[in-house]
View 1 (cartoon, helix red, strand yellow):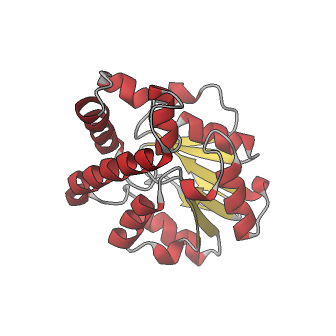
View 2 (cartoon, one colour; view 1 turned 90 degrees about the vertical axis):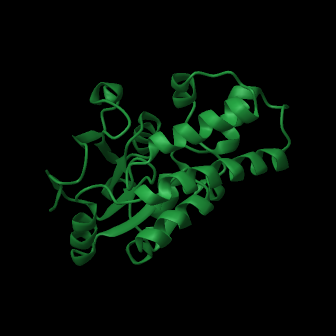
Length: 217
């Protein structure tokens, strides 16, 4: 598939790397073995969108934890995730070729993710990706996370491009909804969700389980 845009905006988890099962494992362990939530794996998976604090509030309510407690829980969960995933850490197939082609063509690129900077740095450092992404917008940089459009609108603003000139690469329905709310097209990586999960979104321009068929226009 040939993609033409002035900017490519990438989600991180499930989009640059295929790590969502490791996040589910880490959350499932934290929520059930430490916090005693008693949730099934599928129930945990359904809650995995937005900021970590938002996940905790959805599950336990607004007043269960202080902000400091939520930050500590989040950090411990991410440390466990990184330790488990590091031996498997790799770009999705075809992405390195796409990044090189986009950079050569002058297409601007950014990361817009609900991940905390600690996790984004973990990926960018270990996979040597900093030179591709002059703009990185994390959960800490916007007041409200996806499906609100703030993260992608901030990416576009910092790159100096219009929302309509961006293509967002996403793996989650809430992320595609955020792109739609920002007035952006979206290419979906089916690493975590089936195509049917995106039927409600008219901004989807293509699907792939990796980047092997994606060509810069």
